[in-house]
Image (cartoon, rainbow, N blue to C red; front, side, top):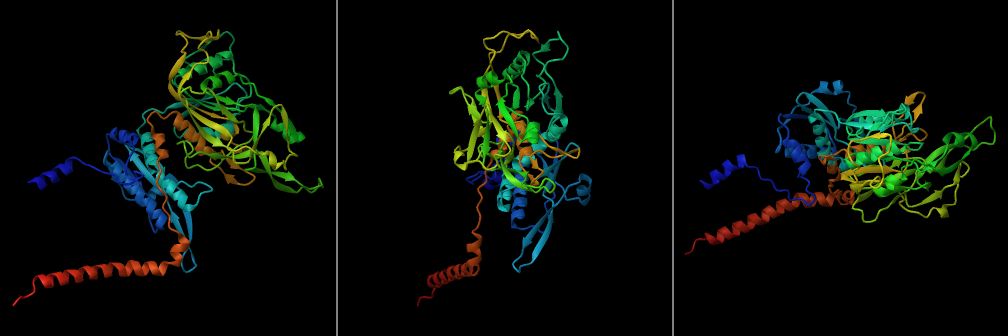
Length: 536
């Protein structure tokens, strides 16, 4: 009776224990909460199929296990693969080239995607994260780490009944739409992206203090002129009410056009009128530029004959390749981020209760150029002994309860408000980047290039993922972005040792089980014979 009762209870109450040290088979509370909100089946089609190697079989197995765990908290139905789905969604396969034991090269076509459908809406989940600079095993391990986030993010988008809005502020010489097009394209996957100025051009018309309240986040992208007192007040009070901001600011004023034409450009501090706000929030953008040995190349004409130019790539230390931090969900698992003319950041405020995390930093060989000064194209072989700084912060995330920069000021005359100044706010988030170049894209022959794409080397860096993750982190009230911090230990075999000891391992693994069974069988035989031996 007791056994029957336990069997009956097991069909009603499901109890699961994850005994792994990295909680590999456990979902986060954010995912469980999201899944419990569903009121219809979730159909998932895994397209990762076919003759897979060991690494991709591991990825497929991990994806199936993640879906099984999700099925405990929601109705997950696995649907068979439909070949027509690939054509209708325009999914591009990846080609895997592998060398077999006989020396021949095998080619496999893989679709590392899953299709998720909920209430008639469909989303594509990319299972493979391919980060430049990481090995194949490391990329597969990162992909497995991000599976829960990938499925949860797709489901969250399918469940949204209203598209959240973000705003890109204008009116201060910010780059035009052509140079922010790729950022808008990336963010439009998650948000409705608006552009506009805070203060109207009509004289005498006041700006409402609640102008920005309908936006989940605002983006201040590479402004070149100062913000008015009214604009600063509206941004400050927006933050006090829980608004989030992505600041991409240069601390230095320079002219790339003059640099290209004259070969040098003076650099002076860029006065945006935001120093007091940011200082109050716990961060400072320094009026300086960082140089880094780890940088992008630029084409330089090394020919003495103007009729026969000879362009050769030369390192440009003012275009550092920034390192990403593994300590933040924004940058975990990302490769280098491309940038040009970057200002260093300083954390200020001491014990202000604001959690500050470094997102991007320079390498171990950097220097800082103070203002006033100049940038010279002839400075392509700088003194390496001057590059003495390490890991200079150039992007920082801020989280906490911020104090208002207008706590002891009057409301600006050009602002319409019906409430007193909020001197402190609710817990919210900000991201500060010491360069606007990180979120800009270049154009070539009227074609928009992706963020983080270097047209001279043809290399793609992680700028797109960095900006998308930063805005998702700013607007993430459900805590889903924290799933990117999940870590799965990478346990790899020593390939050289495995190859050298292959025969030994095969013999031991083949003969040992048989020998153990034979030994146990012999012991049992002897014991039984002695026990049941006939006694006269």
